[in-house]
Length: 472
Image (cartoon, rainbow, N blue to C red):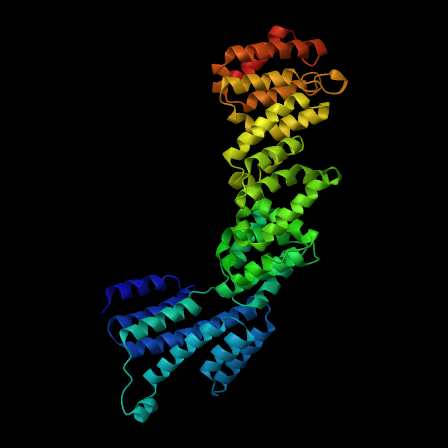
């Protein structure tokens, strides 16, 4: 006997969802291990029937599935009345055709198990062939494997109708919309109990409802993200990819962009759709001044990232785009999302840092300067690693002259906070190694802060404040 086959089946046994069903299959495995192959096949088939009945009962009880309820009542009525009930009808008519719990290929595999069971159990079939049916070890392993993989290992939520119940619940007024709570409930109540057909159908319907439906609900996006993060393998299905790649309208594209921002893994399943996204972003950048603020903050960097992700990393083009839109890009906000973590690589950050340092001297208004320091340059300052960069950074801050030829960074009500943000985001080691450069910069800063009244003590106290608070 093939010991590897035994070990393989023992591991497969552990995947059975229902503990009671697992006990029944252990009996079938015992029969297989001692060479009682006919008994193993018969017990396996009986276990498939029992597990099927339990799954139908679960749908009837917990998901208000009227069709499952009718099937359960019909089975129980015939059994109670002692009437004949076709075992195969339970699989073909109910499991496959009515409840859509399995597909055509799996139905054929179960049919083969049924045929082997009949040849193992019925004497009449032996008389017709004038010989006993003798199953092989390979026959039994195939029967046990298919039974477990197709039915027994699958959780009770299997069919399309269960998705309707899920959407009704998550779109209701009492289901949480906070992602962390939403994720926990959906995983525990649905995804951990959901079989492969249910999950595949759920992915497709979620995409359809979120991208192409009219309903606007935060939980549709939440469900999309939960599925992408925890059931990603279903996005490899060709039907799912086809659904994703049919985006066309502005509304559809912008909905998909938010998914990409939060979970850029979705880009792995988009082919034609990537070109649609790039084209849309290019068109949006041509009307940049008319865009709402969130688009102005995100679209330039998304355009750059998408081009990089698609292998179009033309550095000169990237530098040009970065220089043009650097003042509006909100890295402080974007760094909260996975697209920043995954695709905003060190090469891009260096390009952005260079453009940001250069742009400091061109900031033209007080609030704009504060937002630029907070939103754009602060997440990049950890990349300042040498004295030359540090000196250029400080020089450009000091040389800024905006409206009225006033320094918009050091002579506004945000001046103290501007300097604090800058110094807090540079490595302390770099600041300590370049103490003279820092001291020269703080001499100028503190002179301006005390003269304008934005620091209410003398220059010496001002310098002590920065050194004590930020450098020690």
